[in-house]
Amino acid sequence: MPPLSFPVYWTVSIDIFAWAFFHVIVSVFCLKLPLAYFLQDSVWFRILAWEKSGKLWQQLFRVKRWKGHLIDGTAILKKGYGKKKLHGTEASDLVVFAAETKRAELTHWLSMVPAPLFFLWNPVWAGWVMVLYAVMFNLPFIIVQRYNRGRIDAITARTNRMGAGLFT
Image (cartoon, rainbow, N blue to C red; front, side):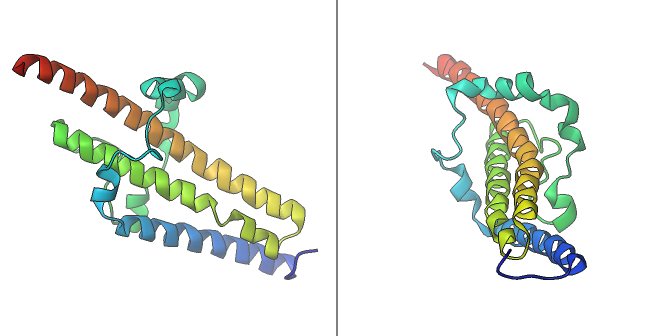
């Protein structure tokens, strides 16, 4: 029995409202973080060798097939950096795009954090459904951000190697 108990109608209503609230609050918080934070090379966002510059995500999940169907949060909040397409092909454009994938990834990781709170007013089985929802809703977005950033990192690394060879 949860610490708080409500009729089913109210429990479902609270769940819907709570998820909407948490998603918006986390999104607004992440939008307020300065771009400079995401331009840093942080261990939290580093693409790891086993991800093969994002190729692993394509091999495992066929990301190219479905990533275009995901909703970009900027369409809902009317703020932020849209990631449906590149905003340019210059090196600086790619760096900003990669930084914004970090912002989006952080947003989706943090959006899962409130899931245990749902055990306060839901039966245990429904609390686990809320945890499952949090993972299943956010994981595709995280995978797409890591896929895109891995590809961008590979392009910028290749460009840097080619540029370094031209000027040395």
